[in-house]
Length: 28
Image (cartoon, one colour):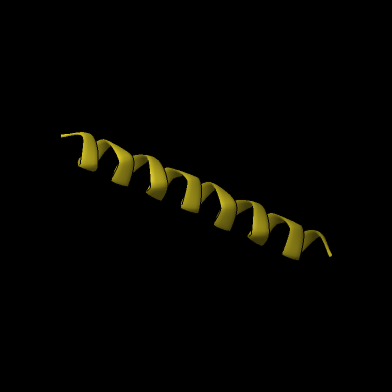
């Protein structure tokens, strides 16, 4: 259960990072 929660949290962080990267890339 805890492992799944950590996995989901990791995916959320990864998605957030990728979205930020895309936005910054588009801005430049």
